[in-house]
Image 1 (cartoon, rainbow, N blue to C red):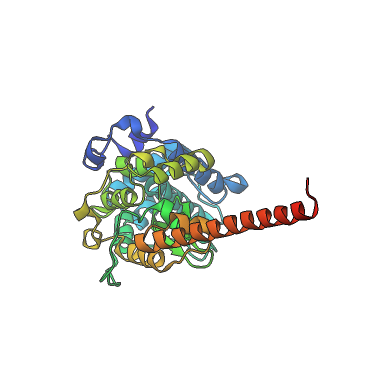
Image 2: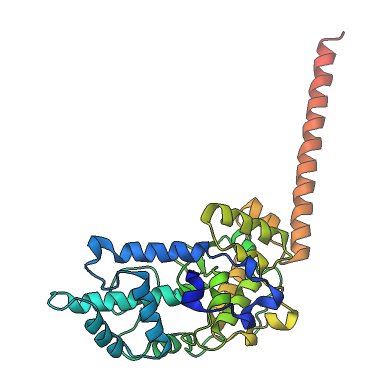
Length: 329
C-alpha cells in the first residue's frame, strides 16, 4: 500500500514548485517523524493512547477531513475502541486524537499544553482541527517591515556564517522561522516533500505555498554556499533532500508584503541578521553585506600581513648582516 498516498492523496500539483517532479520528493524525514511520534505515544505499552494501528490513524484523519469536532471524534472513538472501564479513558481518547493530528499536520497539537517543551503547542480542546489550526496561523501581523529588505545574501547558510546564529531543522510547523534568543538558534521546517504533498484544507489556504516560498528564500538553488550547507545537513541530520530543489524567487517575490503567515517571524529574523556584527575571522570573510567595508577590512588585513612579513624579512636580513660582520667567511 502506498502509505503517503493513502494519508495525503495525490501529489499537489499547485504546490509543485514550477515543474519539480515527484521523484524529487523525499519521504524519509516524514516517516522518521512518524515512527518517533508513534514510539513516544506507545510508551508504557500504549496505556495513554487508544489508537493501536495505522488504520486507526487513517480513520481519525478521515474525521479531520470531514470537519468533525473534537467532541464528535471522542464519542466515535469511545464507540469503536474497547476502552470502557479504564480509569484513564479520557486520556487515552485524547492521546489518540492528538497523535493522529500531529502525524497528519506535523504540528505539535495536544489537548494538554502544560507539558514542558521548547516547542510551540497548539491546544486543541474543542471544535474542529481546522478551526484550531486556522486560529493559530491566521494571527494578525504586528511588526513593521519599514526600511527592511530581504537581499539575496539573506540565506540559511549566511544566517549561520555571518550572523553567528545556529539554524536547526524542526518537525513542528508551528516553530518555523522561530528565533530563540536563549541559545541563538533558528528553527526551520525543512520538510519540503510534506508541504508539496499535503492537500488538506486543515491548513489555511496558502500556508503551505508560503512556507515553501520561505524555504526558497533561505535555500536558493543557485547559491554555492547554500547547496554546500544543505549537503552537509543531509548527511549529518538527514533533512529532506528536496530542500536542495527549492524554486528560485524573483525580486518581486522577496518583498515582505508577499508574506502573510510568516511575516512577523521574517521581520524578527531579518532584524537579527542585519544587527549582527562579525566576531570571528570566518564571519568577517563571509560578511558581504557591505562591500566597501568588506574590501576595506581585507585590504587592511593584507597590508598588515605584508607589513609584518617584510618587517620580519628585514629583521632576518639585519640579523644575518650582523652575524656576518662578526663572523666573516
